[in-house]
Image (cartoon, rainbow, N blue to C red):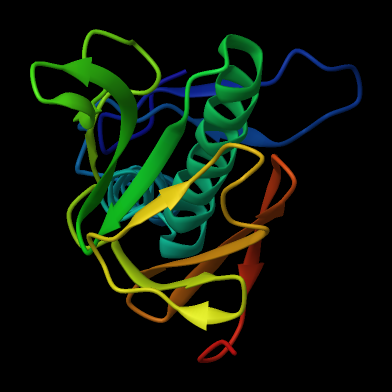
Amino acid sequence: MVNPVGKTRMRTSATGCSKVVRASSDGRGFTLLEMLVTLAIIGMAVSTVVIALYPDPSALVSKEAQRLAALLELASEESALIGMPLAWIGRDDGYEFQARELAERGPDWGVVRGDEHLRPRRLPSGIYIARIRVDGQEWAPGKRVLLDPQGAQELSVEITLGHARARVTGAGGRFQASLSSGGGT
């Protein structure tokens, strides 16, 4: 059936239905629903990219604190197993493990190298070691902390990224990481 304007009109095939459906062939643009769906998809894509580029600071700090706790525990266990003193040195932007080795002048501390786990590490950009406490006393960055049984009884390390803070605490070779709030004690 053809109407006078030149548009094709079709009857629906449903029994008892008398509606006329218009088939448009001129394709003038998008419907409002199509525009809204497109904008929603674009919005989700942009938010996914933003989240990927700017991860949660608390999650980053927590991950680094958990890594440090695991490495401190590993070094403590290794020191006890092999009977060689190991130490940890924290700096503002990273840390390293040292072993007491025989040198030409006698026993001396040397940075552990060639060990996949206890190698020197730099913290990711923006993350810093804000505070180190050993046996309840403030500890200067760059100062050695012994990890063997004759070493420190308690160690607390605070790691920050902006306002996000995490604390690594340990005693007797056991360490744990936790998110902390505020300025720390």
